[in-house]
Length: 219
Image 1 (cartoon, rainbow, N blue to C red):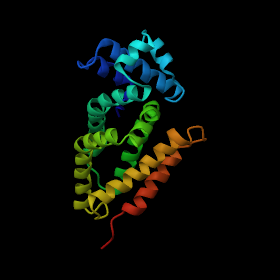
Image 2: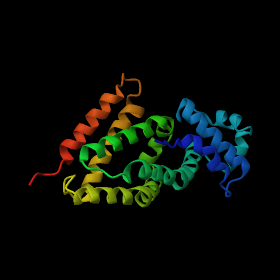
Image 3: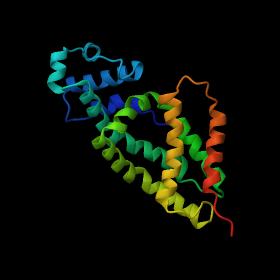
């Protein structure tokens, strides 16, 4: 199973962005590497400038603040890297045939847990900005809807057709699954990363919790 690593893709994505100067690219790449290593709050603009081999004055001509650097960095992640992530999910999970809800949930949960583990640094860097910046959050939702939610809806429709998942509106099913999985990722990598985690058991609990609610009603 292939797992896209967002931060591994980031430098090449930035370098391929024609709208940016090389100095801007250097700042974005250096800043993301520092944010991932020591955290956004613990990274100073001076550190970014030094890592990008330019003065703070030059850097601030292109980016007015550290927050703006992160916002600009998120744009290519949303519009170029997220579609690749969605394609990986569709290939490895959503396009597979399933004969029961349990198998679907096991594969889906394991896929998302593996993705989150491989991208925990990116989650820490980007999560708070997406959470609190309404414009970026809406851009992310729009791209996710086109690249991911449509495919997910198709999978749910197939499961419902064969009476393998509860006959709720798709929006309710998606909201429930997303809240459970996102809740785990938030706890695991943002709020309590130093807790003694047993990911195998966490996967079992997640699947059991989802299956309990999404199991189709018996006629």
